[in-house]
Amino acid sequence: MPSTDAGDAAIEATDLRKTYGSEVALDGVSLSVPPGRVYGFLGPNGAGKTTTMRILTGLTRPTSGTVRVSGIDVNDRRNLAPRVGYLPETPPLYDEFSAREQLDYVADLRDIPKDTARRRIDDYLDRFDLTEDADRRTGTYSKGMRQKTAFAQTVLHDPDVLFLDEPTSGLDPKAVRRIREFIVEFADAGRTVFLSTHILPVVEAVADRVGVLFEGRLVAEGAPEDVKARAETGERASLEDAFLEITGDGDARRTAGPDE
Image (cartoon, rainbow, N blue to C red; front, top):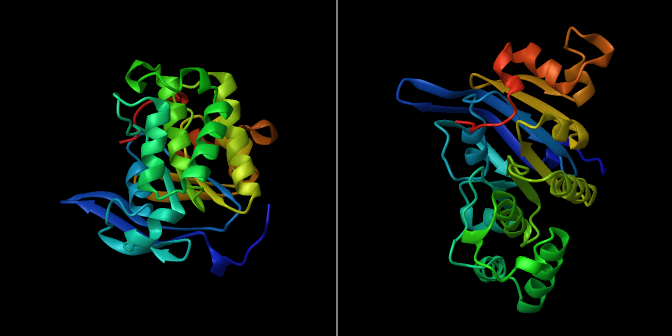
């Protein structure tokens, strides 16, 4: 993957704090992600991952701290929106639309030229095995089919930075592989992926760097091999082993569930 100077960070967050009354959701989180990288963002339920992602995408304002994505202050939503794709854990789809209508609608919102939109939509429908059902209402889709449609709409405008919150939720092994392949290809093209998931083998397969959030603080960060080295099990440690060591959370072996 291409290298870059730290000053050219695709995502730059400094001393992020978020409080809700007396409750501290984030407590001084700073991170920097260069272009062409996949950053795996891990943490147990309630650690603050979704809050962080909403701040990084400009959907939630921090109590204090600063964020720039692709060199743009995240408060500048007008200029940020074309550069960023965000797949939330519960993706927004219109049940009365077919997958093709949903993607056409998003293409119009994004001002994607008609010919480009048509080509991309056909490509993504084919890539994610949705072509045969593309004209059925998404309200009749399985969870996995809805997730694939939502992923396609997230990347349709060809963003520079992709924020993914549980992107493989509800997917079968074939679809998980397709998503993994897309993430690697996306980063290899010099773009950036910020990936939050409980499915640690996916992170282990694609991430260049891993950050572990615990009780609102970034308590570990580094290359996956460096983070795994913190596990007491030694050379054969998995990322899951290290995650459990770092967070002290025996329940983290349950690899599914809402974040906040």
